[in-house]
Length: 456
Image 1 (spheres, rainbow, N blue to C red):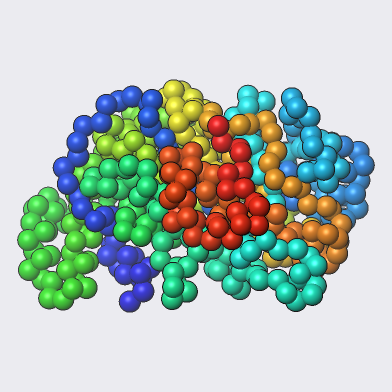
Image 2 (cartoon, rainbow, N blue to C red):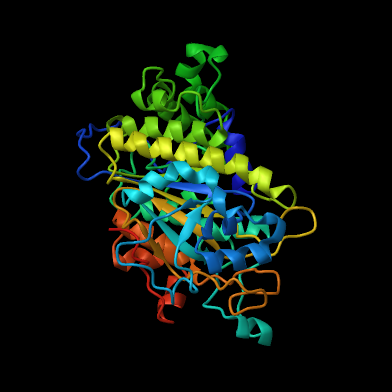
């Protein structure tokens, strides 16, 4: 059985809890001075960030519209972003002198204005620093199965493989192992979107929780739950079965702490999401409640994984993105407001990621096809916000940043750098970054920075 099937089978009906040990929770002082949480928002399917952050000045917008054709958004509909106080480094922005947001992402503008939001340009999975000249010459070392959803999702979440070429852990789980998290209590790494590689550590295993309910059906009754550990152990006859028993028992123990939190109808932060029914809103509301009750979880560091699917927009992209970005912008803004209300603006960081970007040139069916590098948002009080990081690609088909001739931007920032920057903020020592992002040294050896600078 592979790990994904095993964990799904062990988790039953909604919550998988697998930890090296699960002991009694120790009290955690309800202070925010040393608390940090990273919330990873994965946009499954390949987000076309070419329409997420858009050139706004007249010359750059005209070039954008001419190439994007039917996928171009009307300039009058865009949400212009004020420039950083230091101005724009046009050498890093391909001559663009102002940018704007997709209109459905307008709820995020207030965080930009408040200096709580940054944009990281053209980031994606890389095996090594890569140029168009190397690709044309056939000398480039490329990621495994480039443009494949499953492979690029794994590489975004894992940032490396082991000696056998297998992905066994993710950078979120590895980071938690190096920041002094309480590894003997409720797992410091929690997914509210099913199993994810990002949350798996080398030895630390994640907790995957539902957005409501409990791990076992209440129809089974308290007597079953009370006697489950003895009963399950008596049934086990192999190491695999014993491991499954351990996972189920850990889930039972975790459920007694987690279930009251995620089912708390009087939660102040849950009320802030009232009326929002999108999948991403429900997930972020659950994360907000878990952070609200952080003292009960006895953790000073946490990593959360949430997701929104539907970004594989080969057709009908404009209408699809309108709905997806409306859900994303509204829910992330609500979540950030919830963190501000808890006094945790400086303690919680939200970071987006996605399989890959999409072609700048539209296809013939009202959509865009699989591409490579994409732009990401980072939000939080600790973010060095109202600023852009990395290098914006030149909007030219078959140009210096194009893998082909359709506008597949070759990343100028690696996932390893992105992960290392967030892990450093969490508290991972510099000496441990190589174990969090195993291929990081490939980029630092070439002069690429390990820290991208968007975190304070």
